[in-house]
Length: 113
Length: 109
Image (cartoon, rainbow over all chains, first blue to last red; front, side):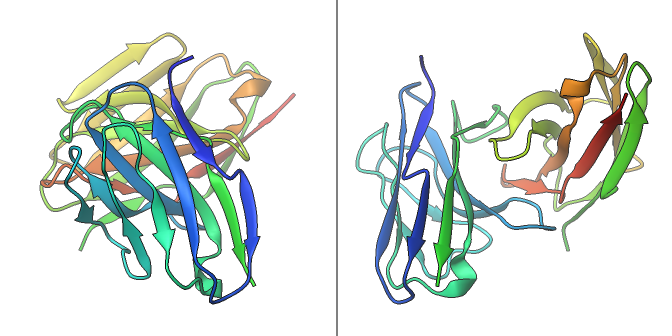
């Protein structure tokens, strides 16, 4: 079944540790996104990629980095996790970087202690 | 600044109709999206409006007024499975989605 997968499903992490959240899509979408979702707040864009080889910063990029080596994969790395990065992380993709619908992965629940 | 406002929570009865409102203020406008999100799950796409007026899709309809910065999602013949959060998002001039915090809809039998 075509779609977006994320790994891990959930993770508990000690502060200061490095962590990479994985995201893979098989829809050959050009654009991909990373969001975080916190209680009482709307989804906030962390980083995005309009096409393979390019990335951009969203609303809350500090403490996170991304890469887009190919069309399918868009990993998000926390270089040194802090408790404020405790959140649910969603990866999404869309056919293009304009008005196309964004499709979301199942999410990763991350707790930083 | 950019801002999306929608009610935090609404309650409705099975079989009834409910309207979820959303007001938006973004830098530029490239359309208004509605998503549904069940607890513990990913958001799923419901509708997209870029022109004024009503778009109907089965039991769900979405309305947009660009001059008022206003949209609503109308759900008819409510079913228990409609209990979820409904997210309003405006696409700004950079084609980035600005999201509201979501409206939690509780359906009672």
